[in-house]
Length: 178
Length: 178
DNA sequence: CAGGTCATGTAAAGCGTTACATGATTTT
DNA sequence: AAAATCATGTAACGCTTTACATGACCTG
Image (cartoon, rainbow over all chains, first blue to last red; front, top):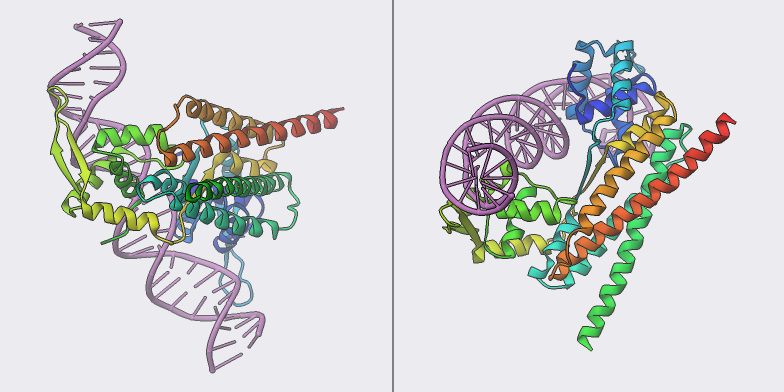
């Protein structure tokens, strides 16, 4: 069987938490993993179809009221694939793409004020994210709780770094104009 | 003119630092921005061709010995586009995708040892990255210096977080088996 | 002279977001 | 009655990585 795609990993994992519809999975991702692993409908639904064809999940109609709704659950094969991935010792994927940082990198082309602007932009962005994470209640499972704790800690650290960098830059600019 | 693609941004920016070949740009990216903004040959070369067609850059042959080599430099139009992007107030892109964290999130499906394994994997990965960053000398420009300082600080923080999480988990597992 | 680096490029294939389309139901 | 939410899906489009192909030059 082929390797799981990025979206495939989170889809299969979310189904390990219980029967879910595609819509449910998207909600869960947006609430719980978006800050370190996003997914869109455009990938989730086709992935569900593929997984069912491969026998990793089975779907069943479970309308909510008169609304059509199809929920999926893992098969033993699916649980096996999930387990294999979770225990696989392969080099883990780690991607970070940060536009404020790239603008800071090139800021010498337009002057040091941009540096300050970008650090502020990064801080504001991060403060919003932290607020979202703080609005989430304590997850009952240890895994999600650890991931949430990480998210809060990382965003707090980022904010602190920005604040310190801002102060340093502000005093530099003050000193320069004096 | 259309928005700059992710690779377009770093290509144009690198050309603001001086004449570069596609190969040079790739080297610079791999050395200096890879940890927060990667790019591959498969995007760099086509992007250079497009930029030249659009009049944002001009290329010229500058062989190194007998080796064919084509270097590019910004035109005024190109400098304008770069400047517009650098000063644009649009919501900056911020992406983070971390597989160890996703495995931690789903770790309840296979047991708490996985949590410890993944945190260790994340720490090892990060230690390697930090070592790479520490091998880079002080950049002469303020922008690259700030970006480098950020990279070092973030990776150091990450390692600290992992260490603390590991200790906590180890003592939990000890307590559980006692 | 073999292996590494310099150097340019392309093709295929997959991934992913965005936007759109549709329609029922629930809330205001 | 309108707006938001639940729910499923697809199509287009662009981006990116990966792999490959080619060849000159330099180093041990």
